[in-house]
Image 1 (cartoon, rainbow, N blue to C red):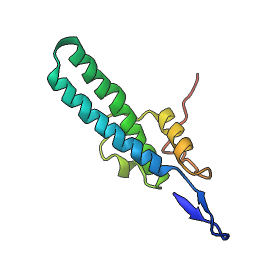
Image 2 (image 1 turned 45 degrees about the vertical axis):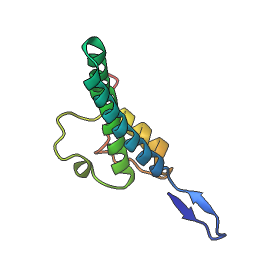
Image 3 (image 1 turned 30 degrees about the horizontal axis):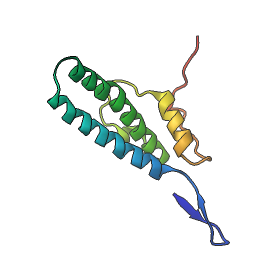
Image 4 (image 1 turned 180 degrees about the horizontal axis):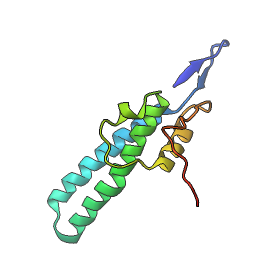
Length: 116
């Protein structure tokens, strides 16, 4: 997203468009993997399935939550009925990478990880 300065130049405010592209790419990747699963059998099929469900899905979920936070939406708007907590470290990393530098991450939405 861009902001126009008084001198007429454009300055990058955040990189939410890049995150949006990432979300679309992950959705496409999941579809491609699911299609490939139908063509294979045995161990390769199981590997493809596990990659789609555990890696791609987790990354897509974290990306969608980070995108919602960057847009100022609540976690309840991003996910209606989550079964398990998201990977908050990945969400934090994405918010920092794609969000504006002035983004204040909500404390309630992003719990800290205790190292005790």
